[in-house]
Amino acid sequence: MVSIEGKIFNIMKYSIHDGPGIRTTVFLKGCPLSCLWCHNPESQNINNNLMFFPNRCIGCRVCIEACTQNAIKEVKGMVITDKGKCIECGHCTLVCYAEAREMAGKTMTVNQVVYEIVKDKDFYEQSGGGVTFSGGEPLMQPKFLIELLKEMKKRGIHTTVDTSGFASKQIIEEVSRYTSLFLYDLKHMNPIKHQKYTGMSNYIILENLRFLSEMNKEIIIRIPIIPRVNDSEEDLKAFRDFIKTLPNVKEVNLLAYHNMGEEKYNRLGILYKMKGIEETSLEKLDFALNIINSCGANVKTGS
Image (cartoon, rainbow, N blue to C red; front, side, top):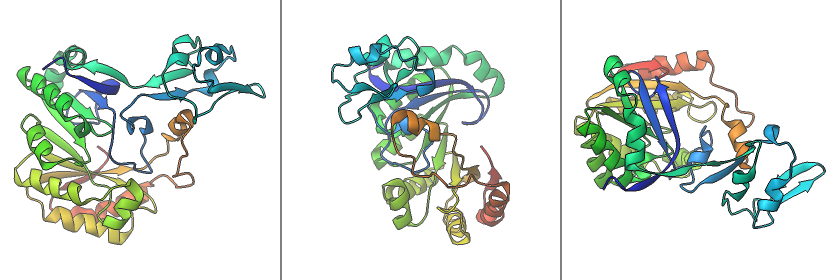
């Protein structure tokens, strides 16, 4: 089973914001949601994505010759990729001397990922850390994720799953058997607005959160506070009132929206739909904290 393959787009060492202690965070590709503010847009498609870094391009034109689809052209001294023709095969990245073209995503086996994780086991033991599986949405690759979790449990490594909870109850239940902590994202309580801003209903998300809570799983709820999206008094009270109904949720993290991911959209050739939306101010975070603070859990800003 450890020969099972999955799609990864990053493995981050020495992470301190994705669960307790020093951690390795494994980012899996694929997500059923398409949140407008997503700061990892390269995670949404489970297939590999071509990313172009124009500031690195030296205009050598080798990529034009390598492209099998005639999708790359030089226009007024600039190298342009026609997204309608590009099949993101990665041939151009293999010949790009300046590393201006990169593929976001690679296929790895469970064994290969485990090998990377266990390199830092001493740090986990000393700091009370472990491994966090994030994304994208890690539950979109359930067989791969479950095998990774099992291997971590065999080695006594603390496991965290960072999830939106958008999956079948069967997957949630199976994953929960091998997960020490869930970082569970809540985007919006209003189902119509949730559909508008993420592309999906929040029904399954809320049902699965209640299910995990009733199973007495350790959960930290994480709420991104997005200006003009979910930061009104009405929206914040809705979060508070729902969390009040959940048993065993001990902590809620309120996260500030930032636009640092905008450049990734440019590299992918994707329109950034949050342009013009201001970053979350400290005053807005404090406003949210004061409202949600009475939900019955320990509420704090940041992760």
